[in-house]
Length: 488
Image (cartoon, rainbow, N blue to C red):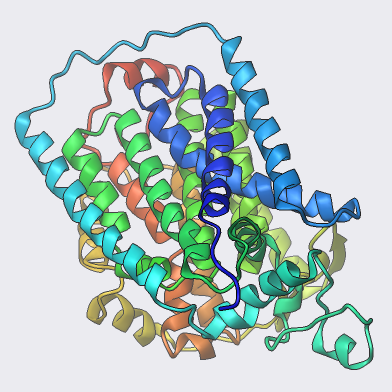
């Protein structure tokens, strides 16, 4: 290394966006977050702040300005100051407790689980700081963009290998992965931001946002479970179940990939959708929309995941009767089948040209897919039943579904957050069973990375919809008048 790490700059790069995002989310949630608004604000605030920074950097570069960390930090600090001033105009709210005392055994369980997670993430931080950035996709898709932008002081253009070979321009670059030049830029912009602050591009500390992303997602999950009325012990267990997932730990200790961010954005979108469905408070609507937009700016599959969140949110907003929903669903499926039979093509903004066919599907930015069945069921079986990437999920989920079925919960129309998770899982199964992506699924790595997107959200919806759980008085009051809850 020819340069030294700037510790003050690194701290500013990590803390300033987090603080700014937290202030804005806290203002947005006032007073709807209740007793857990600080925890939720910290969790959502990290992602809102870091995403806002990437948008600011893009706007700064589009204005033709050289990337200057001090000036960019001043803009972020000004946004934080604005949120702080807005908070001073809000009335002071005294949050009443539930009047229910937490049993000592639950405090003990929470302390033990928190201690185990603390030790686990200390060791993950050591791995992250001491191990050099691994090759594989991190070097093919994400890190090179950030490094080039860091050295050039501008977001220079990346083009396809074909365009580069034909002489796309003196300042044009390309990548080894023939598709990655057109990937959404948010993840390399996160790396670039920390590089600008640290003043160096090849230090493990640049990837500390990956560690903070996992912890912030845990904070949001815990806050939402407590807000939904789950006991302290169960909320702690739920948080532990997610943060101890081996494959999530892998993507925390081996940073540079976009998958952890994609999983977090989708999970937070599902959590905000759940709370918005119960309360109809516009602050939660703002958060699930923000997370849906962030999904689309992380990875190509995130475009579909973002649309899933938005679609499920619109469905909850319309609040149609079950019979009407069934008619709309049947009509939609029939329209899709007819469009594929007649090979319909049309253009959609941002997505590009869409072509539907029984043999091939083309969706502009997402890609082209030859439709054919591939028997890869054994890969899913091995992944869930023999490997340890997802703990005991494959054994516990059928028990939960059986319990819900016996209580008649599975026969009702699913609420928005459950539908979002189900559609995300269906998307993954469909892609690997019916397209050419079955090939990379055979080595398990691509499949597990895709499964990382819905599984944290799946654990969340299972826990908050445990039929035996009773909401706190505050939750029960807020959900009154919104229709029958799927879990009751």
